[in-house]
Image (cartoon, rainbow, N blue to C red; front, side, top):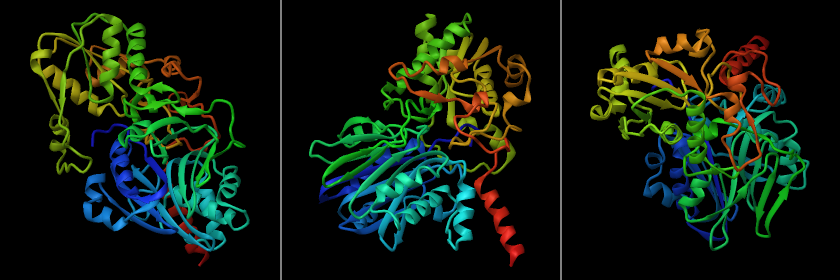
Length: 483
């Protein structure tokens, strides 16, 4: 709607040593993870080896009613997923969790991330007769696990073999008839953590905020490359694919994660405040007030204010009832859509020199409209500070960064030119070096490929944004020629 970055997906899993209402627990947790995906969601329940699941387009409270949760019934395991599609597009068959019935039993899988080699994996299975129902890379992961399971003694062994063939980002939760298995790619691009309830149930979640929401306690992060197997005998860790530090997406701290989450030992809220403090040191300016663009710009604005000594204030009120499905029938309405989402508190802005903090600039169209709102409210000056470096390169690991053709930082040679384009008196971006210092209590590495063009793993040579389904269409055309 506003040409910003889109959230990641979120995964959740619970293993109980008794039969209980695990679907309701998963529902609450997905509510807490809603910020990671607002396009679709689903829950799968394991009741003594019998799988029941429900999925649909929309937000968690829209997809799950009291009736649907009752239909899912009770069980001892459940996994859930909230989705924003970075690959696969809007297709009902892409909604997760995916539930697979194969010769050795049932399997359900939920996945957060993006595989670099998903088209190659899919082609390999299709050439062997595999039939795919959707276009997401998660289906390729499921096929890979099932194919290895046929010659492995258990599912965790199959997962261990599969991880050598998967390239890119994947934080996954897999449910079988007897086990809950979580695994994270060796770079740890996307977060995944472990929790436990007071009565002994084990939890797996994309973020610790979901663990908090169900009254459980955070235990630890799942290590990059680690496989965690949860069963009746407790928790087992397999670390054959682990390496030293991993490379988590730095935008988890800047934008994606909820402020009350803790990732790799560091508070997300504190990381954003540190980003604002670094901005104040790197790009100081005389002003009367510091404001943030809701929501992820607020903590950074507070950090900027503390470091600079310039008063912090509320500049915008956000309409919480505008969803992604908001319809904009005409160009004029699209131009004015930002007014519906944000309203300026004029008494705080009029006649003042304003520092406006936001988490990113993608195309520049949205922030230009926001700047106009401040000008119309009587701002004397508008200085924009951004708590991330300029986007110059595509992301291949799950962040829906736009094509380089549309990125404003690729269209102009200097920051001054971008400032003129969006209508601010000055503009300053956070340095790449500063982003590596945001997680103050962690020694993890970071992926900053969308800023630097340097990626932790080999990526496709095509540097433009290329959707997975476009590649699938190429394969389909190839098969038609063979026919």
